[in-house]
Length: 129
Image (cartoon, rainbow, N blue to C red):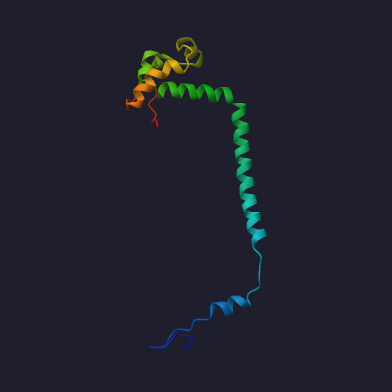
């Protein structure tokens, strides 16, 4: 075998015994390194999540107002949305004025119809049951 050119034709290539090679390597316990890397990654993500929670808690009212307006817009075309004029509501205060307080029994007829796979009654979002 010529090591500069590789194996000669018909000759098996030289393959060192991996066990022999790895036995000569120093034994290193990588557990602390891996644990440290995982801990650093989780800590960074945790700090990022905590900052987001902190920021959102300072803006909770604005976020809630934004959410209710998005829900009204998304569901304005539903039967319930049309009955309660969701398309004409432009603020959370208007919502409180125009949409009566409701409880489960108010939604029961819609839910019964939804069980028969009728859609677009109280929400445009997919329902899983």
